[in-house]
Length: 491
Ligand code: ADP
Image 1: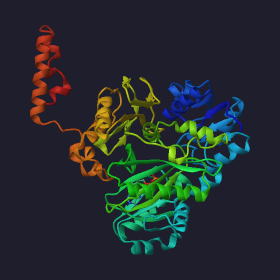
Image 2 (image 1 turned 135 degrees about the horizontal axis):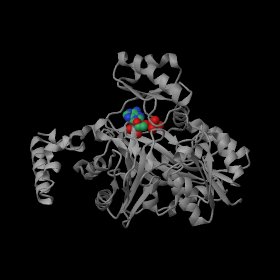
Image 3 (image 1 turned 30 degrees about the vertical axis):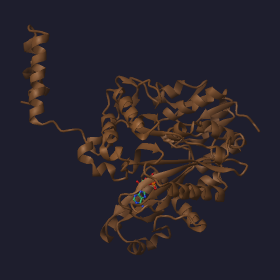
Image 4 (image 1 turned 90 degrees about the vertical axis):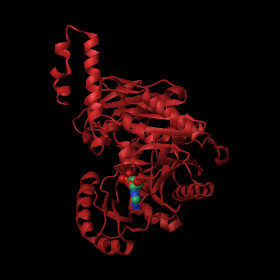
């Protein structure tokens, strides 16, 4: 077994800091990489060594396979961890790293290619008896005819897709033609591959996924499920383990299905098998992610395991540290993703410069961040600022702890979803575990920032005037609300 001595992390932001933490704890040296516009970010300086990726756009920096391998060679690294996103599910990258004589901390190219394709993985699941959402993944010419058979509404997906790109809902045949055209264009530009597939669009489903792990010795196990139904733009913002209100028998069938897939394909490393569950409790395979997931901390908090350490162990050729029967789960963990985005404007990214940014130091609260005060949240990258994950003996304790942690988090300078997340967690339906992917549109009125009524504005203005009157009598005129264009506009 070849031990990794120096690991290059081919990524940016919080996940780099997360992986460095495990390396420090296990005596592995780290190399981090950064693009010029990330020079001031924590990940650029947190490793033992750092390498500048010269270039202006992503294809010259974080998506450049040759540069990543050259950086690893130049810095004496013997392994590469791809993190999530970027090159993490690129089969060519896995292959190139291995060909360069380095260890890839992730699965071999063959399984990445197979499971990274939504059509191929659907075909495989059907073959081995794992249910997939009723749909069609055949040739492009038959898509319209097949949609009629499936029944509307249908969801169009890019076979090579991810991140919600290329996804379109069509309510009827008329919408389908236009939706297929635009999905095709988006898929081609995002993935260089315009193959599409159709799925029956399920209403009010739940997104539940199983964390799996496999080694090169043929051992496969799961680390239970995570529920990630609270989403906007088809992307998760709240994740938890266990899934609330999941009958034990269904959990067993779901984890069995996940293991059936990993054992059949001879999977290696960390992965996530995603399922979608309809309102009747039937679940279907959605896709498999062949990497560490953003939301892995909730699994770590309920199992007490370090998933990055396991990834390294497996990549070195070691056996999984535990047998399935020894994997235990206790309590509840919930994670939220803090984004620079505007909930009131369709969750549009809101890049900008972070002003004051402070995270709480509280028991059972884990903060994962890739930015500090003064850093720029750039429009060139994903606008996630940080993740906060908490553990509680009960789900209620976890929710309250997370609300407290969020209330002690300060973010200024950029529009962000901190208050929105607090309203989600504190909503009675969330507290009752009534989570489904339509949660946000369904409870929109309660979740959006309260609109100020005329009465509120009047009392705010009165308070402002009173403050100025007592604070400084002499300067009252210049501080008066009536001289302040913003407040004056409220008259
Ligand atoms: P991506 O890989 O682009 O993230 P996924 O296939 O993982 O796409 O789906 C992302 C989200 O889209 C799911 O978590 C779910 O909320 C929604 N979704 C996907 N497939 C369906 C479906 N057939 N019906 C309803 N919602 C779906």
